[in-house]
Image 1 (cartoon, helix red, strand yellow):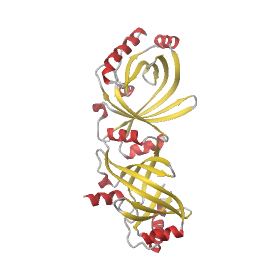
Image 2: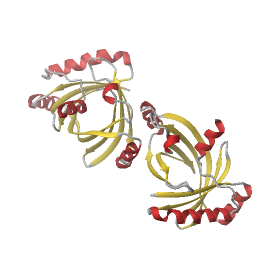
Image 3: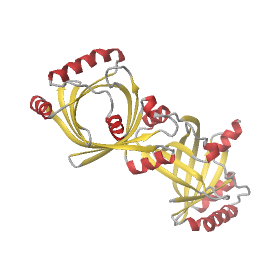
Image 4: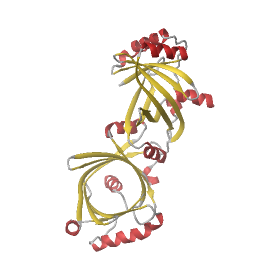
Length: 178
Length: 178
């Protein structure tokens, strides 16, 4: 599965427009901890390894996710491999024993909206970074990616986005820190 | 938790003695796949990373296990961190994306017997290696390890074991191959 994502900077009025226009699917709290590879520089290879703890409606779920390098030069499209994990603390202990080191934890409140079959919009309020909007589609077909990227960009432009961002929240937070 | 284990070579008569004397807890089939670290030589550091698929009574369970180096010079005692995993195939994909490489798969039929509170005996029929017997105890207290090791050795000697083995099945299979 290829996740096609286009992200832009947002503000109150863009958030309001989305909330009025589209149907809320769910609101979640994410605590994402990113890890450094013991011998590969993820910043250079453009990969990421993450443990996400997702809370919503009193539930709690955790996932281990590998993100491969971006597949094109304009969108955030990349290959993802994700598995649910039952015990994030013990899983973290295994990662640390293998030499993976915690880089940073990104916390955010995420609202997810349904646009149409296969397309969603996400409003993120990220601790330390502010408001972002993301349009997302999934496809199995790599050839369809450029067309989908254009489609998602148009959607964000129509909602008032003036500045796109390809960097991840992790990258943005690391740059802010540095 | 520290797992104290003492292992020896077995034969039909030792297997029969255990089957007559102790109570069978369960019989399982294990398919253990071991991985090489992307930049650490596990053979040198005496660590291991394993995905175990366990089948018993029509059930199926999978675990990811990290094993730390042996803690003493006579037993197989080491620290273990183990988590259940839901999707061993996807988990394997993540490990491979991170640069872990499959070393070998060890298949065995294992029978586990109850000796007394805290002590079990395991009969292993390992593909390509033959019959082994293992006595096992668990403790939280590192100081109790030497005493437990002696105890388990005596138990195996009484059952007819004449040759002990500290090396793992993985090590034995790799040496056979080499």
